[in-house]
Image (cartoon, rainbow, N blue to C red):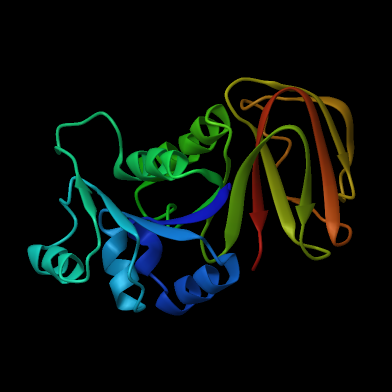
Length: 216
């Protein structure tokens, strides 16, 4: 059976109450932690199913804390090509995930945020539906058709991801598009808004990065 899996990344501890609510709403079949994300789990009283990473952001006392609770830890060398969240996503796929929500993956480090945005493409390559979520927004990638579900007036920004996006149709947005071409050098997809509870996206060629603001 395909599973829903949540991954807690290192920036998930900025608001413990938000993280607790997100996990409750997601109702995942399993919770994985990418290295320092385990600290965030401890802070909200969650015992994860697995911890993955090089453990450079998780103190020894916390490693012992989870070890005494029987949490498996897959340790990698710090001299690796993959990020800890990348490794956690691969583990989620190996566990039979169909949907993966990554919480706390968009923190103060722009390079880490960009790396985590790239995991949306990796997820699609692996046949997974992957969403990044933080307090303010959800981010996902679209090839083909998708529906954004939210509330009237919420901001939705669209960026071509991995090359130009062609044949873009938008319905249910303040600024609709028909057979449009979106390029990264001309960011015309910024700050659109939902006209109602849903907006539809259709991309005939390429991939779109969708940033849906929930609280702005």
